[in-house]
Length: 91
Image (cartoon, rainbow, N blue to C red; front, side, top):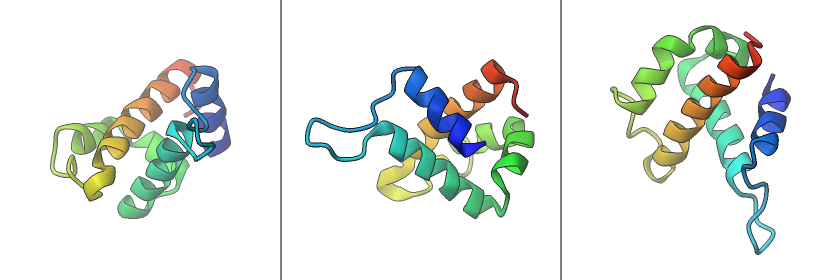
């Protein structure tokens, strides 16, 4: 499912690399989703099944500042993952 998410991000026009050929948004979002899975002790499939409860926690709730400097990437990646699930109806 992570590969499908990555491909969806690319199809939606998210950057894969910066001008300096460093990993960009697609990398940040996929690693952030993996990080959320680890924090929640869930597989990506389990995260997809519980996205309706996970999304509010990471966007406005108790975990919205989790990950320090990466918190924005975490919040945005969880939102994008939710959109991915709605649009592709994978879960």
